[in-house]
Image (cartoon, rainbow, N blue to C red; front, top):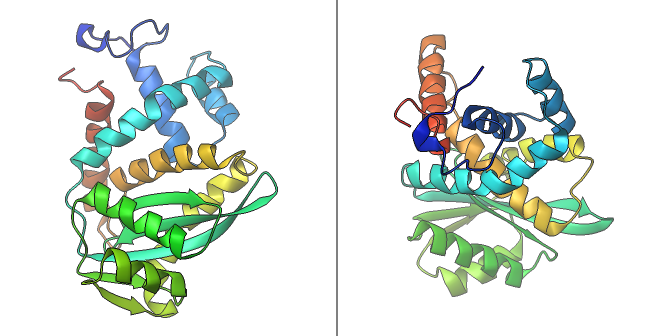
Length: 239
């Protein structure tokens, strides 16, 4: 059904299924709110018999490397960062998912932590500066005092705006995570949540389309994203 070209063999060495099948399974899992068993059934509907455990192994092996490649392809982030934190329950304990997005809705980074204080906010800001390589012009948050304390120490020259109504972009960015949390019946550990969301957010960034575009523009953007995915995963025509 799907053939694997010679130059893809090294990356997907010792796998019984061709690169296109593995890439498609990983894409389904991270792109849509699907469980591993749902991905198994969708592949079975196309005549591809693979267990959900095999899909899980593919996700663990390839997901983060795909996400890293997507990150390198994305344009530079905007100069206005929206930061927000939301509570998530992991193994019956309260954790906090800290998230940063730019003014275009691109997720810059996430960090799962057990605290909602200045120390946790500082960790997020340090991680952002390390990943992005530059500070924003403006940082927008809610009224949590921890943000102000962290900004004064880590990014003292950055303008800080605190207002709940200004931070809808970051708050809305949590919604896909909530959907996946329900499908997965909650995250099993902080490490699992961090690993999954690190990949999930980059895949969402790649397939994010501007709002209020025409149908033709939407189709073009989708085709470009799919081509980029094929290149990221090594199954493009050039492979």
